[in-house]
Every structure is written in C-alpha cells, then in structure tokens.
Image 1 (tube, one colour):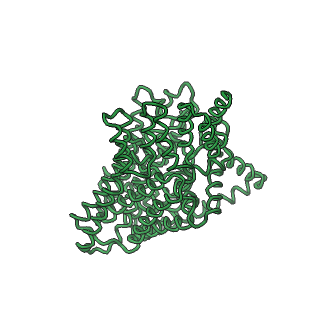
Image 2 (cartoon, one colour):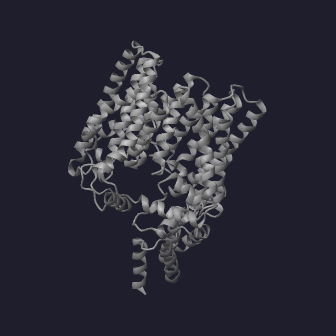
Image 3 (cartoon, helix red, strand yellow):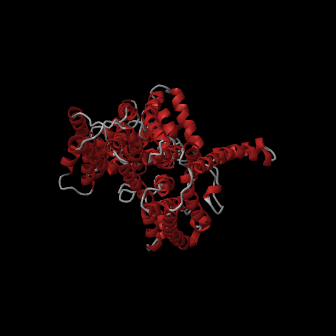
Length: 600
C-alpha cells in the first residue's frame, strides 16, 4: 500500500496513517499477546533506535525545517514499531519462514504487478521517466529498484531451504527472478553495486553458501540473458511504449519460468543427498572462489589497464560530474552523478558542526547555498552522510548502535543456519550498501520491509521466557501514546489543511485546529493564504509561516509573491532578496526579481 497507493511518498501526511496502524498493532501485541523477552543485544538496538528518533526530533530546535525534522523522528519510530512487532512475535522457524516469505512476496509481487500494469495498460510510457527508466510505483527509479530488491535475498533463502514445500520454493525463486528483472528495468547502478557487494558478503559469511549458490545461479541464469529486452526502454524515444510492453512481458514470463524451474529444482533436491564431507569441501571451495574473485578483480585491473593512474583519474572526474546527456544503450555504463557534490556538502557541514550537526532536514537548505550543480536534492543520498551532516557524531553513533546489534544477531543466526536470520543478514547487507549511496531510509515503502526482516532475523536469539505483564502493559501504553499523541496529531493536521484547501464549509475552523494539532507545521498558514479572499488577507498567514521557518526558501518566496499580489513592492523586493540568498541563482526567483525591478 505504501508503494502502490502512496507511490512511496516521503511526505509524512501520506505515511503517518500507516504508522498509526503499526503502533496500534504493537500495542495489541504487547497488551494481549504473550511476547517473549528478546535478546539483550536486540533490546539495546531497539532502545538506540528510539533514542535516534528522539535526537532527530530534538534537532528541530536547531533545524531550518523544524516540522520535517520532527517528521523524520516519527518515521524512525514507525520503523521501530515494525521492527519490534517482528522481534516480539517470531518465535519459531515457521514464523520466521512466513515473515521471510512476506518480504519476498512484497518485492517480487510489486515487480510483477508493475509489469502487468504497463504491459497491458493503455499508456505504458507514464510508468517510465523521460530517459526510459522504470519509476513506478514509487516514482523514483532508485527507490523502485530498492523496493524490488529488498525481497531478493529472502526469496533466494527460501528457494534454498530444503525443508520447505516444493511449491513454496518454486514461488520464492519466481519472486527473486521478478525482483532482479524489475531492478534491470529501473537500471539502478546503486542497486547493482549493492547486489554485488551483498553477494560477496553473504557467500563469504554464510555456512549455507553452497545451498544459496544454486538458486542464485538459477535466477541469474534466467534473468541475465534477458538484459537486452529489460533495458531496451532506455533512450527508446518514440518506441518507448513498444519496448516497455516487451520488457513487461519479459518480466512476467521470467517469473513464471523461474517458478517452474524452482519447483523442479526443489523436487530434485529432495531426492539427492550429499554427504556431509562433500558439502563441507564444496562449501569451502565456493568460499575460496569468492575470495579469489575479490582478490582477482584489482589484480586484473592493474594488469590489463595500460595506465591505471590516468584511468582512475578519468573515472574519478566522471564520478564527480553528472553527464550532460546519456546517449548509450543503457544507464549502467554512465558513471557520473551528483553524489560527490551532495556528499561534499554534507561532510563540510559535519566539519562545521561535528557534535550535533545542522539539524535533521538541514541538508537541503545548506545545499542550495553551497552547491556546484543545478539540482535541488532534499537528502545527501547516503544514510551515513545524512546522519553526520544533520545530526553530527551523536546521531551517527546512535544510528550505528541501533543497527549493529540486531545485524550481529543475524550473523550469529546465519552461522546456526537459522532461516530468518540468514535472510535478515543478507537483506541488511544489500539494503545498507544501497542506502549508503541513495536515500532509501526516507522512503517508508523501502525501509519498512527491511526493518521487519531485521526484526525477524534477530528474533531467534530471544530468551524464550514471556515478558512480565507489568512490563508489557507499560510498553503497550507507551506504544499507544506514540500512536495517539505523536503520530495522530500531525496526520490530522495535514488532513484538516487539505480539507480546507479542497473547499471545506468551515475552512477557518479546520485551519485553527490544524495549527493547534501541529504547531510546528507551516502548512496551515500556507493554506490559509491560498484560500484568502483578498491579496491583503493572505499576507498575515504568510508572515507567520516565514517567522516559523525563516530559512525556508519556499516560504520566503511565497511571501514575496504575496507581497507582489498585494502591490507592496518594497516588501516584495526585500523577501525576494532574502529568498535569493537562501537559493542563489534560482531561476524563478531571479525572474520575479527582474520583473519587479523593471516596474520600478
């Protein structure tokens, strides 16, 4: 629902209702279930994530966008609720398998649903960005890839599990193939790097590497040869509709074929028994191959490239600058992006404010002033750089303290061949590598399945004893309070503002309650200005919004336009200059400023 109905929106007004449901579900689990005590490391991670959320929300005090800082803290609490539900309710191998299957079905199922939509829809081109990369349902190709790929490793782990029904293993391989094919349609380079790195990590660490190898090879062998049809929509121009439909058909038949191949493999696997010694030798051989591949890559580079230093310098230059145009047959061969510039700004802000950062969501205003590109990203495209630049070393340490303990438990469970732990560890390896080069954290449709899988993977190490009733009731009360007093008010405020904007019979009352429910938000004031009957009546709410967020270029520009409509030229000039200082070179502000200056 978050991906399809809300198109993966990062706006809190779109996902807060789901967060309320998650917190209330946690309340029910704690109050009326019989949750078992989790491992101390998992508890420590849970507490650290809560503290990270509190630190994000507290940074509203020094953030240029206080309401968004608060919203990011609420998003982390949303993830905490999902993580806690999985951690407290997964008690058996079957429970773990069911959660793993749900995550695999989410990634693969969304890929198939998307392929059906543009294969048989009337206008397949609307599912792709201008250059022919799939950006549906999340409307951002890289997040789309992450949404599909978050289910890849769970699907492969299930396909490798000998004790599962053959049909389930076949469907799991089909979901994995769908995720891979969906990723190729998005042509996400970050997704590809994360796949390669996570594969190396998983096959190096997991003792089940031999069993995982077979479904991995099968999925790659099926999807790999279809690279051409799946990437054909890129720069297809007038033939985009035709190539898109063919790509969708390719994904659909690949999913069906992989399901059949997975079923056959599962049936054959049941009838073959490999002696323990052979398994150990083969597993060790696979590990040696992985290590050799990692070592061979740099060796091959230095032996085959005539001038390695110059080559690397050229590639570094290409990485630092986004290409002006992409004329190749695939986005994968284009190295350049604006990641370097966003990371530069985030790290510079960390050096200026090393302890507490510039405040959550402070990156976007900072980048507008310090950028060397024409882009306007709202995040630094790296969960670590976002934490460093906006929350300082305190924020990064809290984030690491929240993620490392449950991942460590997943690694321990992987060594014990626990199914959910293996899936949780592999998913974490993929997800965190991808999130290090993109802003997956802020897309709840991508973050939620990751935290569910992480909680399920860490649940195997629980202490086995039920939590005390006094503890569970206290925690249930806390979860209910978060749902009712943290998640619900800003969601209701956003709904009331939207109601007033859409023609409410009592807009003044709606907006008054919207301001009371969410005193940090400027949205009620912007809506009040929008529905004002006269230009003069729109000025006071815009002034109040500007006082709340004086470093928001959007708010200052809106105030400037309001002054222009009210024919207060001198005040408009003042605000236009203030907005231009917040976003130097902004075309819309420059044009408005020139129009005003010509009139004088």
